[in-house]
Amino acid sequence: MHSTKSANSDTSFQGIDSTLVHETSVAINCTGAVHKDKRRVGSGVMVMDSNGNILKVWVNSKEGGIDLSSIEVEKIRFAPMKARSEGWDRINILSSNIGMVQKTTKRDADDTKLATILEDNFYLMNLFTWCSCTWLPLKCNSKAVKLDSFAVSLVSMISWENSFPKWLI
Image 1 (cartoon, rainbow, N blue to C red):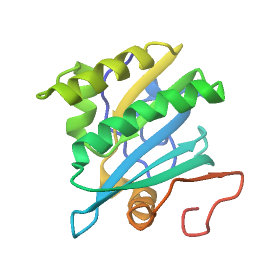
Image 2 (image 1 turned 90 degrees about the vertical axis):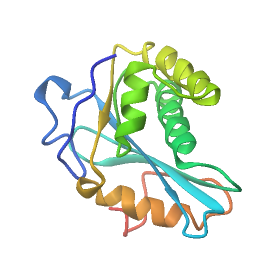
Image 3 (image 1 turned 60 degrees about the horizontal axis):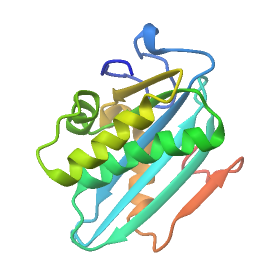
């Protein structure tokens, strides 16, 4: 697993440190949002190729007292699980939550639940030929903001492949 870097791009690998860019890689953007009433958490995972083309999207929401940190770290775990099932071997996991990226790359958690998920993440991320977990500032990630807004309104999981809503593209 490679170190944490900051990306400065909205939809592609442009701006990411050149040591993290591989033509055969996919970027897996993990995102999450808490609804204003704090009773619903939305999350999304968007996969893009090295040219910024969207390949797949998964969005989900959950009811209840779920905190955003748990959602973020679970989405970071979801990313390598989906990547393995799709046969991708070189991945760059992107998250706008710098704290979760740091916890993932350092395997540093302050509670038992997060520690367990982070151990899973570390194991899963080491199954790849190349894997990185990168912080992507939210201000550079307008697609994640749109995905978050949509996700908090869902009542079940949605997946898109090959055809995507115009507001996301």
